[in-house]
Length: 376
Image (tube, rainbow, N blue to C red; front, top):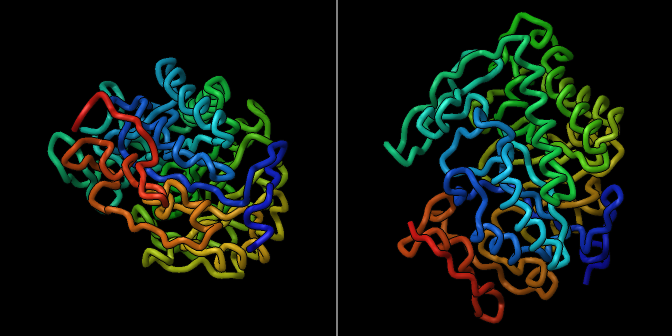
């Protein structure tokens, strides 16, 4: 049996029970954008991961672009997230919240009253998204943020990060990947600004670094991580010539800020272009704190290879959906159950627990006994 994978790991001041991270995955169970008891059960079942990173959670009403994603900007949300963090900690886990502002990836039907879609530039992303009211709709066109507004958006991240600590999270992960607001500033396709936040690689990285710096100053760099997806194409993000220059610069600057980790995602296992090894190497050389790698790690062999290479921790996504006891299955060599894709973001015939909290453990028993009080 591997010694490294299942041995304790350090992350800043934390000691994790193993080197496995549960990757952030949107599951769309937060009715009214508020976390709930069903979500607490979902995360409880998976608390054997060394670290859980929650689903994307918006720091602002304007960032709630998808249906039924949670927020973290008011007291009701804090109180309900606290129930989740207490549950995970009680079962021996650690948990970071991923702060995800969807930016131009939104439809107005998904936003609460008074909120609006905002982005670096008024450029709609290609593609459609689900709305509970009218089903699939094209992404709406965002309003371009004014220069003087950017400090306010930065402060929304800071406020949310402070609320995260109040709610008992061990830290926050800034979502700078997958084509959401922070990455939208990095790319010349989504950022066509003419002020100091557009144009050069340094200017396009400015807002991401300002947010990272401000959050780190507010809650501590040892509690602040960031997710990045160089060479990713999710959410209509075409490649551009300065990708490697951009991420090498980011890695260097994030190291100066002292973030506890960089979380790199490679979507090639789902059909996207692979992140070149040279890109990962360049980031690894410039960022020497914890590096988490994610993407297609579904076996002990693959995880061990990564841990013996450039990764300090390995994040696993979809296998955690259908295997609440994934760590135990990996440890014993047991086969992995396959997920039901139809219930990733939507309820099944018996409600929101379907395909969420009802996957059985190895012994064939339900992972939990929780029975939700609401149905689809």
